[in-house]
Length: 224
Image 1 (cartoon, helix red, strand yellow):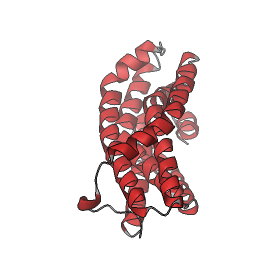
Image 2: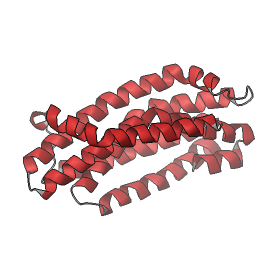
Image 3: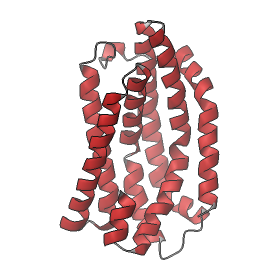
């Protein structure tokens, strides 16, 4: 969405910046995505065994991990942006656009990981329809915010990044609202515990996927 709208209204340098940013960002979050896939498997197994207490513990463990990972990766992305683009030898004419776009985008990593985590857990307990609806709504909001921020507010390439972050934040808000009313999942403070054995089990399952995703991301970055 960002590529289409940015390329149409902001020019080729801005489009190149979006493309370069995506591959670097994908590398940053790929390991967290892999861990998430492992936790989803653990949740599915416990849900199938009707061990609802373990499902809640796995959910809270993944949520706490997502909160920490989201904050850490946001800082890494914002602080390390210049080094990342220099390492990939981003052309000088593209660099200013890439830095402005990437830093805003990376600052919203917490929302992306929380949204992904919520959808993964819902799929793990057999709900595949509602996550699809959340994604569709988020995609539509992303398009709307892109057009609003770029064409109306004239925020340039930062507007495209802000549109994606805001759309993800809206997705998180919708998912949280649904989870709060869910019979199986809980967001109450007393239920937010970190179950280390369950989490490590998810890490063992998801780590190969995370490493694979990192390898793919490195290959894509190398092609830039």
